[in-house]
Amino acid sequence: MFFLCFILILFFLSEIYDAFKNKSFVAPDFLFALGWILPLLIAQYPVNEIVHIVQNTGFKANLLSICIICVFYLLQIIKPRGRFDIGLHSIRVSYWFSILFFFLSNIGFIIALYFNGWTIPLLQTQITDSAKDFFQFPGTATLFNLGALGVIYTLLLYYKNGKKITYRIKFLIFLSLFFLFELILYGKRMGAMLILIFILLSLIPLLSRRRIIRYALLIFILFLGNAFLRLGFAFKEYYSEDNTSVTDIYTFTLLQPILYIQPNFGNLNMILEENRSNLYLGKYSFSFLHFLIGEGHINDNNIYNKIKDNAYNMRTFIAPFYMDFGFLGSLLMSSILFYIIFTLYALARGSTFGLIMYSYIASRIPLLFTANLFFEPIFLRNLAIVLILSLIFQNKSSYE
Image (cartoon, rainbow, N blue to C red; front, side, top):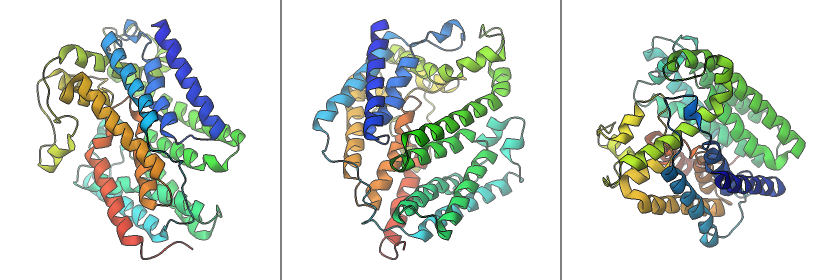
């Protein structure tokens, strides 16, 4: 285990150095280091000795995870060549595109409020349960999430306008902040911080290293504030003398970063141990197809679904690939996914389509350690909406 940790530390430090040297914080390599190499390093901590309801990361999960790293870096040899270049002088971006995204987002939020009896999740005792049922009316979640795309297009317009703060940009900044406020009311404080992180990554080419560090420190402070706001609720809901040796909330606080990551790899190890022969051939990897035919949930009585009912139920992005295609098949599917990401990164130049496609997919890479977010129905629906609206707007107007 010591040797594994040493190698992972070297890989991670190498990517950090390269990112700061070349200011390539949006490159797949750096995002992969954040979403897979660093979490795998953290997952080596034997947290089961303290919190007994989670499983430690085992040999098989470590083996598959290391193979994923090998696949990623082997693809560096054959990946498409080219350097990421926004090409802002040639792309066409409509001011009304951003307005439309924010308008639809607010419509979705208002409709959800109406069908929830004007109940705001943030003000409820059980924030998580209230937020889970907030977008119960069909389509409202999709509409609300378009606000994130409004933030993306606001940044595009800011760059396109030569980084000048005009009245239009100020209005879009106000709408972006209002969307963050709605996220907080919805109970998704982490979602609001992810938007701030995205903005930081987008502005990095314009900022000095000192300002980058200051902005990152501000986000880190907000992250800690969010964690403390959730601690009392989580400690009472999930922990008792039977399932943990933690006796005070302060120790629990220190464990939070580990407990957000380590159980995911422990769950992956359980899946590798128990599902050795059954292959489902796409049933879990492409679960969005079930939504298209009206079957919203997969109810198989297997280890994959049993983990879903646990307090810590994330299984990393590779788990559904393994359930469907086995060990070697999961490596093949991962290599296809990584190659698509490399291709979009190399080709996202002079094109609104390529830029939005890569931005949208890249936002999921740092979360590889949680779940396979690339095939979620809401992600694919939003992506389709972006492309359709881009076709409508691209030949009608450009921002001046």
